[in-house]
Length: 375
Image 1 (cartoon, rainbow, N blue to C red):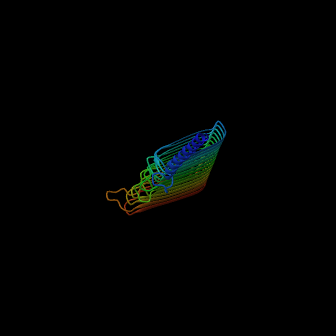
Image 2: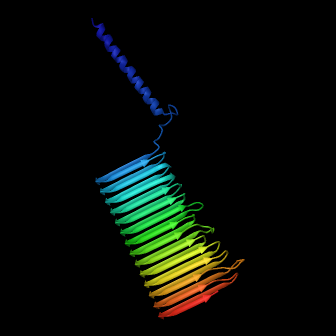
Image 3: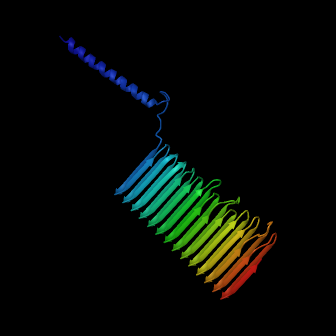
């Protein structure tokens, strides 16, 4: 009478064991992966981590084509971050925001691009665009109120760093064709209402801007490089209302501008075609103005130095280079030093083949004037 229930229990146990065996077998095959029972599991192609603490924060991440990594960390109120890595491979992105109302966008294509954004404060904005290239590196760090930074890089081997501390500072960096050679840009701003714009193309350009104070502005434009040594530009400003423009084309151009005080103004334009141009401008005081324009023909060279300290000093220097049918050699050397008030100096030089023009102007005092013209 008891055989029936015993057989039923045995059949139930057999079904359970069979089901467990099938489940374990399927789990083993799944963990084994396509390489066999001893192969590790296939790793995930894209990785993303989002961590948010506070209220009304928002984060959006879109990745495609594998091996991309994205990190978003936000702490505060009303922060928003967008990360997009499309048709890309091995791109990394990190966005960290602490405060309120901060907004960051990162859009990367190509491959092996790396970007990091750190914003601490209120209403800061950062936009990073790296497209069509490889090995572009971008770092944006902003601390304060209402700072904004833009970075646009393409074609690879471009590197840019932007640091802004204070309020209402603005920085824009555009670097396009970085190969052959690499473009590097560094912008550092401390204070209020400072602005810096950089545009570089062709590769092998190097640029640095440092601003400390209020209402300073710097614009640097370096384009197609032909000379082997590329273009190099450095702008440093301390004070208020300082403005500096530097425009370099071709290669073998280098310029340094240093301004301390108020409302100093410096414009430097250099263009070379296998020639060499070097320019240095230093201004201390209020209302100093310096204009330097140099053009070097093949194998020519120009070297300019302007130093001004005081009030309302003005120096203008224009140097061309070799201008003959069969140019070779030739160089211009120019130096202007003015210390005082209301001094004015103009220098214009054009060198012939294998000849050198040299001009030195030194003025100390009140309302001095000097004009020099050499061919």
